[in-house]
Image (cartoon, rainbow, N blue to C red; front, side, top):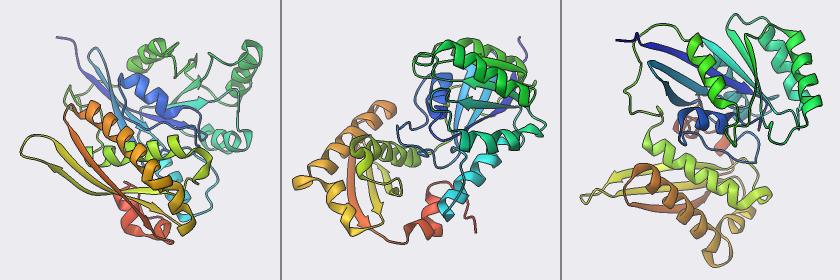
Length: 298
């Protein structure tokens, strides 16, 4: 019998570098929300990827950026906690946007960390080859990376080779999770994340990212279907018409899309009920943080 291996991989990068998309590719199904909006990953969502006898626990950290508010500080704190005790750190870089102001402090923080580091240049399906190679060389000169990979998290290009290399780095050990488990996120939290993703997808720039989805209840009905009740929390009254839409059309569309996706993931019928609440100080509310899986950072 082949010896089992199991290890932790921290996925780190500037906001919007493609971390969640890459975690979903490695796992082989959706476990983390993706959005064109930066800083959508709030808590450390774990994805669990298998590769033969190897189990890799992927810590999908929030994008690391300069924190201004309590919510920002909690997200950055969660990101660095995700890197602690990891067997490898994947640094994901978007070669198109680069976001130098966020990449530089990240490189400075990583330079003296003892973990094995892998550099992943994402979005190769859209990046030009020469600048891509120059960027890889420049970052590689800053610190020692075990490997450098050029991938497209979106198309899956180059991901298989990267997964091979990651698996080879994992230490021998018993698996932490059952074979059929793909995430440690509770279904209740996953349901809230899926609704939040739809909130961003359908409202684009109209709604700032300081909106939250609070799980209120998650009940399995006698017929096996699931009833989910959630609260969309916004900071200002003026945002309410944006979320509701004309005659409630927008919140209905958000609910329908989230319900369909959740039903597909869970494999059962889902009844989803959403309502909007204005709470000016929600981003200073300890209870809301805990519901989102974040630590309360002073």
